[in-house]
Length: 173
Image (cartoon, rainbow, N blue to C red; front, side, top):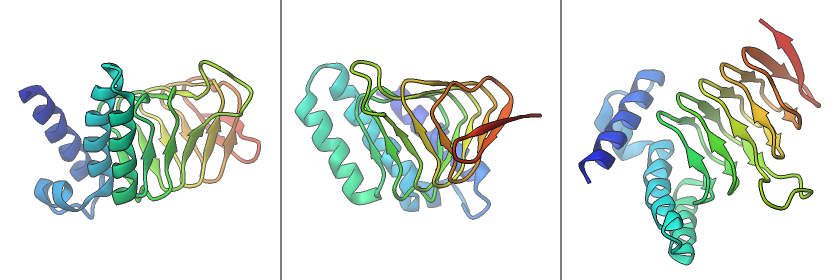
């Protein structure tokens, strides 16, 4: 049980370090919806893993009601995810998110409706996804990628690039 509190403290500390508006860790714990949804998700994901699917989904829906952020309990989220102004974020069941990622409001990690098993994207480490971006399908986004605001990404993206536009076009550093 101590491990979960250590993880949550690490999440809160990360948010406080990345957001200049965060006055202190208590401020983050009490007031930040991006932190609150990570708490709900950790609990829901636990129940999902032990196949208590109804309880898992119920907890995730309660989290959605309170935060405006929808994360399916099956999604796998790495350490230190920073969700800034998270209203409208949707993360699908088979999505994975690496460590040290940042997401802004209205981001969708969704499916295309064509795939049956793996339907959602895999996001690498240290990825920034701008507000309104849509990352769709069973695709892989590399490490250190930046996805611009309102971009639509439907194909694999290699490491260390910036993606902007509709459809998303890669720009090398």
